[in-house]
Length: 308
Ligand SMILES: Nc1nc2c(ncn2[C@@H]2O[C@H](COP(=O)(O)OP(=O)(O)OP(=O)(O)O)[C@@H](O)[C@H]2O)c(=O)[nH]1
Image 1 (tube, rainbow, N blue to C red):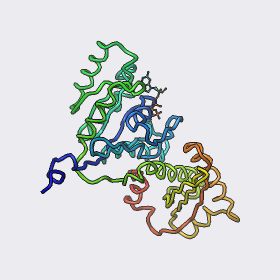
Image 2 (image 1 turned 120 degrees about the vertical axis):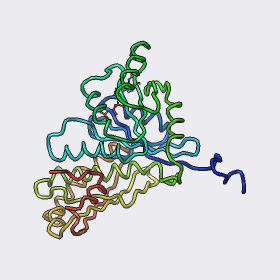
Image 3 (image 1 turned 60 degrees about the vertical axis):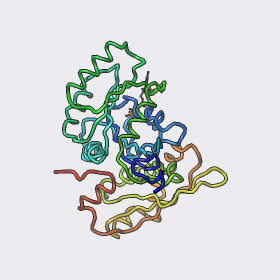
Image 4 (image 1 turned 180 degrees about the vertical axis):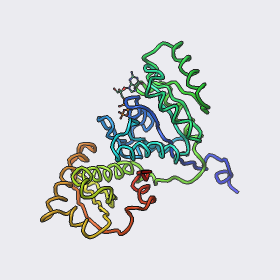
């Protein structure tokens, strides 16, 4: 047996999902960027636009850490919003580890309080991250750490500034040690575009929903089939929209293809804004029967099946 293949040897890989939970503006995107470093990540400037579950992928000490974002935690009114909020929490239930972000300056305000209450139902190991420590004095920070730790058990507490990078390396090391042993989920050559593929599919799905929600509630899902960077730096993306019935396929296509053209144009524009290069988007519509009422399909879409 070589040293490399011995259990526990440095070559043993680890891989896991880390859910980031926190109120809007707590600094999740900034933290993802700080953790991922120079690698491609998705930064959305808009509040609560985050639909993609994968936000970034980090490699550290033979570990692949997949950072799973949660759509903004807010008070849901519409059915889709409720599905999204359940998704945020199901993301936490599915992850190997939950990273709870608090804005150190805001402390345990109403939003943070609601999140901490809800977190009590999540059984997975949790790490507390107090962010924006550059904004408050140390005594206040320690009191906040204590107050949060009294609410529930955290495996670790980190005090960081995602903006300056203070404390981020330690957090990254701990995440790497905390994900379970196993092979990498994403091959290294696909790592950089995996979150983007996912986000691009979510953007198209959002455009379909916006244009057709009355005619087509939930009955579609989108997959990114290919993502090719061209020599001129533009990206060619192919996506398939799956619907339940032929009649829905016709709705998505619209008269003379007008609807799908407009969905494609909107989606292309938004994807291009995010990736920062011209995008050529090709959409296909296929019928995949009888899945609209199947909770597993909802999960595939990244949505929780709403309990009505
Ligand atoms: N001073 C300070 N500001 C920070 C820090 N981290 C993030 N910010 C700022 O806080 C604001 C919100 O940060 P984001 O990373 O966009 O927050 P977010 O949680 O991803 O926001 P949503 O996408 O709305 O959920 C931005 O203006 C950041 O620059 C920090 O450590 N210190």
